[in-house]
Amino acid sequence: MSVSQTNRLQQILLIALVVQIALAVWVFWPKPAASQTSGPLLGDFSTDSVTSLTISDSDNTLTLTKQNDGWVLSDAGDFPVTEEQVTTLLDNIEKVQTNRMVTQTDTSHRRLQVAPDDFNRRLELTLSDGTTHDLYVGSSAGAGATHVRADDQTEVYLTGDIDAFNINPQPSGWIDTLYFTIPQTATTQLTLENSNGTFEFVKDGENWTLSDLAEDETFNQNAFTSMLNQMISVRMSEPIGTEAQADFGLDTPQATVTLDTTDETYTLIFGAKNPEDSDDYVFKASNSPYYVRISSFTGDNLINKTRSDFLEVPPEEEGASELE
Image 1 (cartoon, rainbow, N blue to C red):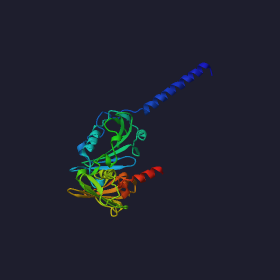
Image 2: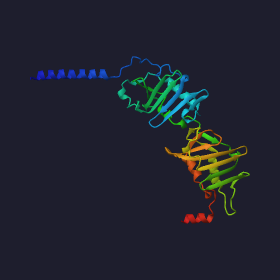
Image 3: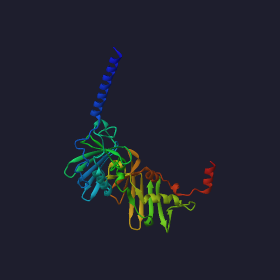
Image 4: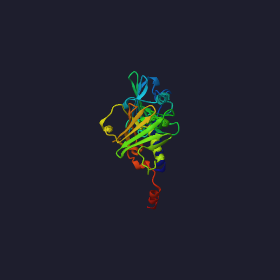
C-alpha cells in the first residue's frame, strides 16, 4: 500500500471517529425536557394544602400531621409541634423551581443522593385532596445548591430554597424540648428516692439542708443546688406518647423525685432505659400527660445518688485521700 493510500485510510478512520464521538455526545448530552420551562417543581402545590409530612433519612422516619389546632407528632400521642418551623419548610418547598436542571438521566440519581434507595432526605407530602408528592433532597453542590428531585420525574435540579441539613428527621428538631419547669424560688422541699435510700431536703429561709443531718455532718450545698437545678428544668430528647407501657419500667421506678412548692406538689419518675438507645431513660412528670425520654446524663445522676454525695468530706479524710 502506498503512502498516499495509507494517509487516505487514516483520514477516513479519523473522520469516522469524529462522527462517532459527535454522535455519542448528541445521544448522551442532557437535553432540556419538554416541560423545562421554569416553574414550581411540584406544580400547583401550596403550603396550605398539606395535611401530612413524613421526613426520612437512612435511619429515622418522622411524621408530622396537621390538625385543626396545629401540627403534631402523630406517632407520639399527637405531641404539639412548633408550627412556624413546619410552615417555613413547606413555604420553602413551594419555592423550589425547575430553572437549574443538572441531569435528566436516572443513572445519576444515586450519585446525587436522590434515588429511592439512596437519598439524603425523603419528604412524603399528603395533600388535602388525597394526592401525594415524594420529594428527594440530596447532596450539596455548594452554597445555595442542593440537588432535588420529585419522585415522578427523572430530572434533578439545584435549589437554594431547601437543604438536607435543615430538615431534621428527629422529633427534637420540631418541638419545644423543655418538658418540665418550675421556679426555683417557689420550691420548698425535695425528696429523692432511689435504690440507695430516701433523701429529704428542706428549705430553711434561703438555705437548704438534709432533713436528718447529724451534728457531725456538713451539708454540701453546691451538690444539692446542682441536682435541684436539674430537676426544676428538665429537657426531653423526644416524647413517646400518652399511654403507659409495661416496658417503660415506671411501676418500679429507678428513681423518684418529689418537689413541693408553695402551691403544688410534683412527682418526677425515672423508668427503664430505652432498649434501642441506652443513652435515654423513660421519664414522666405528674403535671404532664406525656411520657418522654431524657438523656442518661440526667437519669444516671439521680439514680446513682447516695447520701454521701450531699455531705462535705471532712478535712482529715480529704487530706488522707490526697496522700493516697
